[in-house]
Length: 417
Image (cartoon, rainbow, N blue to C red; front, side, top):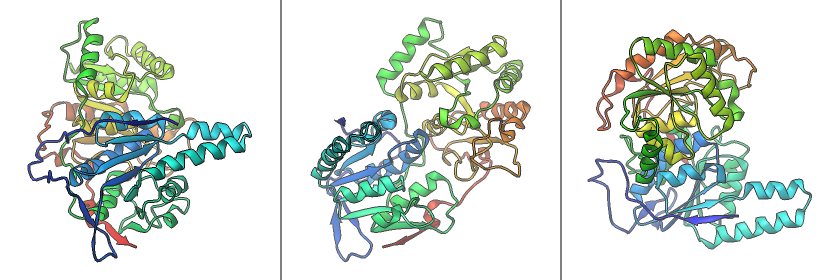
């Protein structure tokens, strides 16, 4: 098990003049007649990159509301880079999932119990005042309970899964349970701090080190000054191959954009499979686009995103990151729910989606018709619409660039003990 403390950072969003800066932090807890001082908070969102990214606006609000509190985020190693690059918490605590699973599979129950006991001891030693379980599954609920925190916030029935609601003593239910993940997370923190100020402007930025690394990589190809290009990301995680758009379709999109004089770059992470996929699109597009340098981590991705005029991908973690950076996005949607997976509402976005009777399904079809029927011409048209608008990072009116609107989360929540 690895534990790491990172330096607390100043909130990155602008327009924060009204945010309290005193070290004393209190919160009114439902069912209590007194105010509970909050000094140590445990945030639980263990994994799934896209879901961790979609938790960031709510955590940014917590950081502003509790400037003097020590915020700890419990996360699995695979998603820790997102939390680190965001710089919103004081401590990152890694849940040792891999070693625990290895102990079970190797049939060493004594080793498993010892590792679990040691982890729980470290968790309880922090003496958290409250936990906020954004994950809402059995594992996260049990970890909240085992933390020893007297106040445990989480989702109620209908939102929580695997009966995780039994481990919380402060819960939220939504009037409309089927809402975006952003709104759901916002509703949860609103019962923690009813007066919370949530970000309504892009707030994620890359570190200066990541920007310097990107410039160095671009200089070798003479592209260090390039900006305002369309950035296409054709890859998905290995668990979400059914979300991918065909390489031949991506190539057709690129050709259409190139014909209109719009510069296009294509990105891939450090995965060899994603790089191979990007190479295939480049080959089929017949040299009408630029292969972006490899992004080895989330911080590097943020640096690349900041140069783009539009980001385009299927429903993916990088797309949600682009929204939080303030880059307009075009989301290609097929098997996933269009309401639950909507991009962040405070950054421009459009969607290429052809509804089918079988969608959304999330069943992982080997050749999903819902992605296959999205015409490249439709995707190119959506991209062109967003490419022409100004890259507004000052929070201007962007409503006309969203495909659909949803009620604010403040109007959707019910609280319960």
